[in-house]
Length: 432
Image 1 (cartoon, rainbow, N blue to C red):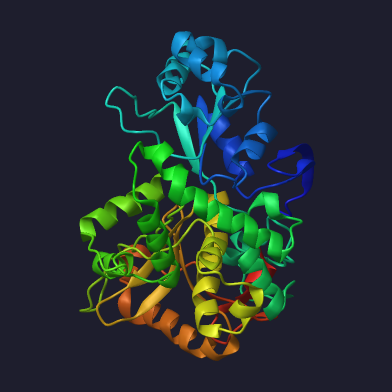
Image 2: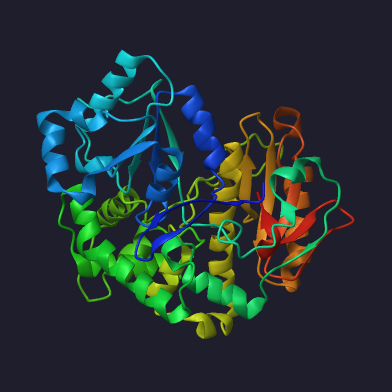
């Protein structure tokens, strides 16, 4: 799939623009053909409204008028009338609409009736139906390099399962890749300069700490400590920092904070989809090693980490060690977006010997793939060794089967296949 340019619609801040296809578009179509409704959930500004409008035939946007929210409590069915699929944007502003949509789906007994989109999880309500059997969920994230037309897309992620060897060339060099990392995958920043993007991302971080979390959870967390936590996550991006480590960073002012309070802060960031932790892979092992179960820390977009720490393109490019962590998080963002087109789910692997694999994709048919993310050439040999060890000495292949493919995602220029069969893929050459 080449992500062709499609319909015109509105994106935030820049008015009427051309809609760039998203990797999950086909998944939206498939779910609309199978379920009564689809929920698009993800961080503010990642493109949910534009994607919803692209697939909808009518819409109501709850954040446009308080009258819509009042009407949702007085007569919600009035908001549900219109050509289908009907988009209900920012539905969490009137959580009672969820049950109304579910009842309407039951009454109509037709598929593809509604698209809901939301930038946060509403507060728990035992009276709210789960939506099971009626509403399918799709997680949206900021644009991958492929979706934002910053990749040549010469290597297809979905095609790797049927490919013995690859070739291709990246669209971005080292400095341009650093710039792309700082700008991020927000649709609103497609034409932004790095300076404009840094201003946008700093403002995004400020809003997270001062208002977004409070509006979503109803709890007034200390914005200064949330900001310190965001900075700590950014310094530990792509890692497994403990709650105690994060708490120590948050308490840098000389005060103290309980690790469990930090966990609540993390949960609040997750509620607005700003925190996007990568869970550990649960798999049968044939060795005596034991799996580690801690999730890796990732933000919705690594550009937020750069903004939280005041890191621009030049400073990022001059710090290969930190850039390596940012690059890994970029790769995870892109792999999640591209694998989502096939309903693939991402995990990471780490065992008690210290061996780790940055990304494992599990597909609905039970097949799996393993990938390492390495910024430069110097780590390719090490990454190849880790992938071969995972396959040949760790995973019980009699229970899960051989990997569909293994690959090293890099910040280098050329795509090729090693003699071991492991692919080397520049991130800026990767596509769906």
